[in-house]
Every structure is written in C-alpha cells, then in structure tokens.
Amino acid sequence: MAQWTDRQRALYADYYQELRKVKAAIAYSRRVRNIIQAQAALVAEYRRASRLFRQDRNFSPPELDYLQKVYSDILEESTKNLDQVLLLVSSFSTQMSDAARLELIGQAAGRLEQNYSDLREFNAQAVQLSLQRAKSRNNLQTVRSLYGLN
Image (cartoon, rainbow, N blue to C red; front, side):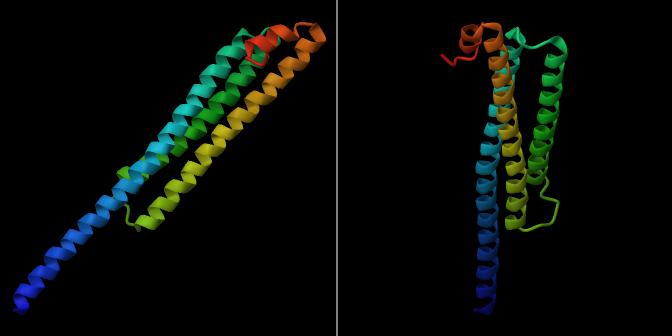
C-alpha cells in the first residue's frame, strides 16, 4: 500500500507541477500579448506622427532630423524592453520563481509604456510648436487640418 501511495503522490506531484507551468505560461502569454500590443501602438504612433511632421511646412530639415533622432532613440529603448521580455519568457533556463519572472516582465512592460508615453508627449509638444508657428504665419487652419484638430 505504501508503494501505491508513493506512486500516486509522485504522479500527482508531476501533474501539479505541469499545471503550474501551464498556469505560468498562460500568465506570461497574456502579459506578453499586452506588451506586444503596446509596442505595436508605439510604432503606429511613430509612423503616423513622422508622416505628418514630414508634411508640415513649419519644421525645417534640421528639425525633422532632430525629430527622427528622438524617435529612433525611443524606438531603440522600446525594442530593448521588448527583447528583455521575450528573453525572460523564452529562457526558462534562468532559475527564478514565476513571481520574480512576472515582476521582471512587469518592469519591462512599465518601461515600454513609459516609452509610449514619452513618444506621445514629444509628439504633442511638436504639434504645439507647429501650431504656434502657424499662428504667427497665419496658416493655423492648414496645420489644424493636417493634425485633425478642427
């Protein structure tokens, strides 16, 4: 009877261990999906703003180069954060608890969200600068139309 009990205990221990792995994988996949969606939103925002700023006559070529440099820096940082998340999820050889792994993923996600926030704030400042310049040049309506601010 003791052998049967030991076999049952071992069988269920393996079963529960596998369930813990599945639960962790589901938690990781949900969090990673949200992070990937945030990265996609960041890239979409960058593309939209970059296209609009290139059409905006209120920015000089050196200013457009500066905008592009800031975008490149933000995109590079967000890519590093995404890479860290993917490394944490795909590299289960790193010994850590699920809670620690999820915490590190959360921290990287927070940094990526900050990148997105920084991008949006930078874009808003650039739009405000363009509006100020347009106002002084009497082409405010053109700029409002360009950015959909009617």
